[in-house]
Image 1 (cartoon, protein in one colour):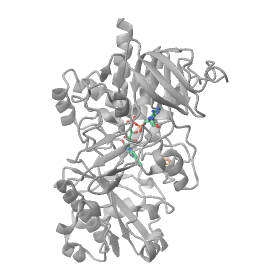
Image 2 (image 1 turned 60 degrees about the vertical axis):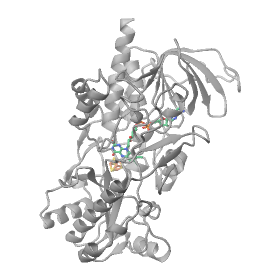
Image 3 (image 1 turned 45 degrees about the horizontal axis):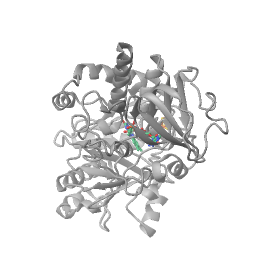
Image 4 (image 1 turned 30 degrees about the vertical axis):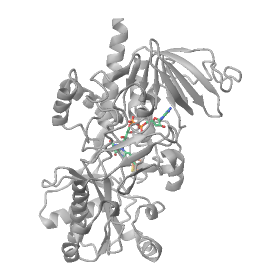
Length: 493
Ligand SMILES: Cc1cc2nc3c(=O)[nH]c(=O)nc-3n(C[C@H](O)[C@H](O)[C@H](O)COP(=O)(O)OP(=O)(O)OC[C@H]3O[C@@H](n4cnc5c(N)ncnc54)[C@H](O)[C@@H]3O)c2cc1C
Ligand code: SF4
């Protein structure tokens, strides 16, 4: 793997502010080093192609304080949000490895029925071949179930509550990890590098391979389709370069990629889904110490709610104030007892759709998302379910993710009496961790993911419907598939 310094472009004078520089030829240029970009670039290079990988962020280092990680490695310091009938934060990463660096590591395969639907949407999409790519991705990220000892007490209490209610059991989730110690900080950069990210799975093994050039701190600013397409790149410090490649792959993520497709007449930037997610806090008499173990260790499905997935969720104490729907003395009261607080999350396969635009430029996407009443009711049922399970497990008090003063309840009876019909979308404290769909397969793109001459799209934006499962394995699979097809195309030429 080479840096641009090593190929001569880091030398002062090799480029000048504002002026185009000597074109450099690559076989492929990939913009964005997240799940899709890192996997695509590494596979292209391993297949013999001279490949350039651009990433606007830099390499992430573990931070002692979760808030520092938020401001350093989350896009816009974690403050990206969708506006609509509420204010809904949407988190994405901005670092080498993309959002996988700050994700929870959970691995789930694309539901088979979706793959069959995608074949109808995009003729040429092959569900069986894609299934093979899912397995390849699964192996590459070393996905395996969370061991019992790392489940964490939040999950064990959830298991206990399910058992007491006579509900089907939850199970350990599969995760991308290698020697995880249960430090509980996956979303703030794993301190022991145990979580397997796009960087560790795909880029690190290519570290000595000269066919891959990785350029952190380099932002794609413009791409012009053609034969060959050309790119303009802005490097930290303001220097700009113009580059050529036989083909360009846009992997900037579902919130950034549509920017580059404007003007191509594609349906890009619309149909945004986010998997609206939330969590319930519960106070127990016994110590929980939820930060010990894997935060997102267990998953559960409620057979009556096929659009909901329940998954563990716990944030370190210093980040908790940002995620509790409380302020002042009530917030202080919960934080003083955080040792004994458990939490468990849930997310919806959303019917709601949003869109992304760029009135303030590409780095500050403006998101619009209106939570449909059906989704709001579903999320309300999700929080009610988690609260009831924790009460069954022995919780003294629960905190519902609702921005309203009656959000604390002291008994399962109070849960029954709660005025659920009065819950409004803007009162629900939710977040989107999985923005998808803004350049959907079968809408903006065909099965070949080609947007224009020499220009391809591969990231969460291509997933054409709300997936209902955590998306990284699906995105990796799209990347492995595209890389194989691009290499095949090159050989055919
Ligand atoms: C807190 C959190 C927890 C999550 N947990 C899970 C989980 O447990 N399991 C799971 O499956 N998924 C999880 N996800 C989601 C998952 O990580 C993402 O869906 C996935 O990484 C998206 O991959 P991508 O390739 O589409 O984009 P990303 O991984 O977001 O990568 C895009 C990259 O492109 C870069 N970029 C953008 N614009 C430019 C530009 N102009 N020039 C150069 N570079 C650019 C960005 O900086 C970024 O690094 C989680 C997400 C979050 C936020
Ligand atoms: S639980 Fe800790 S050690 Fe395991 S992946 Fe997460 S941060 Fe890393």
